[in-house]
Image 1 (tube, rainbow, N blue to C red):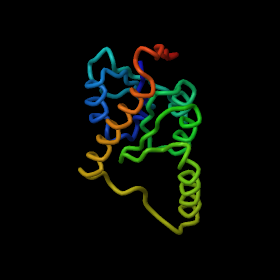
Image 2 (cartoon, one colour):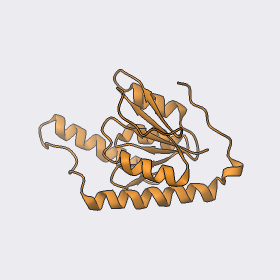
Image 3 (cartoon, one colour):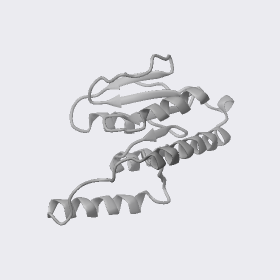
Image 4 (tube, rainbow, N blue to C red):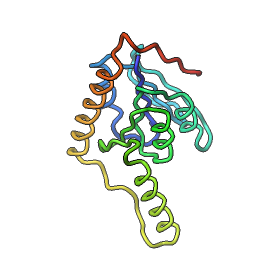
Length: 161
């Protein structure tokens, strides 16, 4: 069974993920620094890992090929891509071997500019168009995974909780 891992502490599209996962009967693991409300479903699980970077480290350790990671954290995205996972940010941008190096470089540049006081602020707020783009890309990603890893060819992943 394919698993969707949500880097959940700041994820604005959790409800959208739950809807898509329910439609495709995908297991969802919500990983955060503290407990949060999740749907009452045997397919949705909450994993709490406290401490700086602990949730990201847990996802990066357990994720595998054919899994999906939803995150805005670029270093976590890079670690997940390296393990064969499909990675999306909350605005529907796909992160892969083809673009993760450039995305990491831009992230590091922006971090340096912020530390130097040259730029302020963060990403733009979510819009309805962003949510629509995310839903379309998540649906497209799930279908690509199902074509590449048919359910009968995939063994069930386990998670150390």
